[in-house]
Amino acid sequence: MTVTDVLLVAFGLLTLGAAVRVVTTAHLVRAGLWLVVALGGLAACFLVLTAELVAWVQVLIYVGAVVVLLLFAVMLTRAPIGASPEMDRARWPGAIVGAAAGLGLSVLLADAFRWTSIDAQAVEPGTAKRLGTEIFGNWVLPFELLSVLLLAALVGAILVSAKQKRDGQSASR
Image (tube, rainbow, N blue to C red; front, side):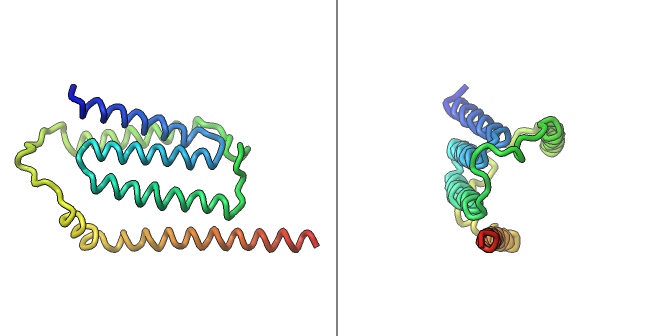
């Protein structure tokens, strides 16, 4: 095993452990913080695989924006920060769905690649220019729809928070 293999396995295990903690914790804020660890571990895996641009996009977009949006939504809507009885449900339905999804994705991945090997010398390395051309050329519509979705989620959290605040003030009068 090379150093790259060891680092990839270590960061993969860190990511897997943090992902398990995301879905098993009863504290919403702690789940968000474990999500930061899981996404950071995935970015570290990208760094080990020498995909620096993808790693930094992972950090900036997912860790920097999505998790911050999640935490702001929790704070603005005044969701319960501590252990919540709504989050303490039976875990077996989620375990069955997760196992089925994992098995389905594994079968799909094995079928798609058929365990073939790729000649690394024949593959042209990716560049920032090529990635930018793909994102802003072929994938521009999903990219923009994602930004509109994130904006709508933030506006919705503010509206829900404002409505709860108004309802709380009128009830106290």
